[in-house]
Amino acid sequence: MPSSWPPAPIGSTKKGKPPLPQAETTHGASAHVLPDDAIARERGPLRRCIVTRQTLPKEQMIRFVIGPMRELVPDPGGRLPGRGLWLVARDDVLRKALKQGAFAKAARGSVGVPGDLGALIVSALRQRVLDFLGFARRSGEAVAGREAVLDWLRHDKVALLIQASDGSPAERSRLLGGRTEGLEFPVLTPLTAAELGGVFGRERAVHVAVSPGRMVSSLQAETARLAGFVAV
Figure 1 (tube, one colour):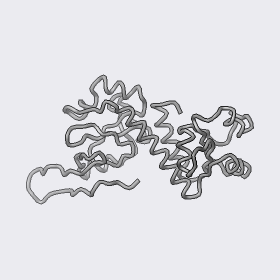
Figure 2 (tube, helix red, strand yellow):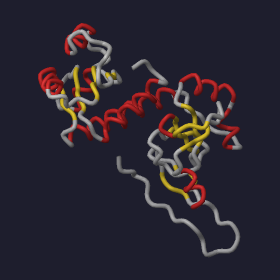
Figure 3 (cartoon, helix red, strand yellow):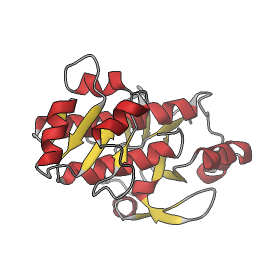
């Protein structure tokens, strides 16, 4: 998703340490822009959780930045400038971070934490799943509807099956002939029928198939992060 942040200048011709430049955030705020060496570290593949101290791939974590008013801003897409504070993508870790004041400790100062932080994270992760599924649809890598999905199943074109979380269990099972094990592809349920349908321009969709391609791993990774906060 393209960022609305303007490019931030780096460096200074003045002696001494110049103030860090600012950039506007998607929340109408801004965050400090990292110097070159810190940006390089931010681009590495691993991050350390400020609560568990685990070092994990960033795809398994949630990034946060601090805005200019010292407000905490979740950044699951990792696009906002500023020093990243990272948590393992689990609700229990988030609750522990809030209880221990981990964000303020990591930021070395007071931090304003939104009262609905957990809901903001879940909403952002759901949107990322929707966005990646939209990319797959537009590139011809995803179809919706029972007949279209059955056709792809018959032709071994399915690398990932997404079914509506609020769909009838019997209907979801019937598509696969009652099978729940031994499938050659994962079955995920991160979204409702209305959310799935919206991606494909219809009111509802219970079954969505995704063909082999780069969107499969992205959808699996985002669903795994979402599963750390809600049942999927």
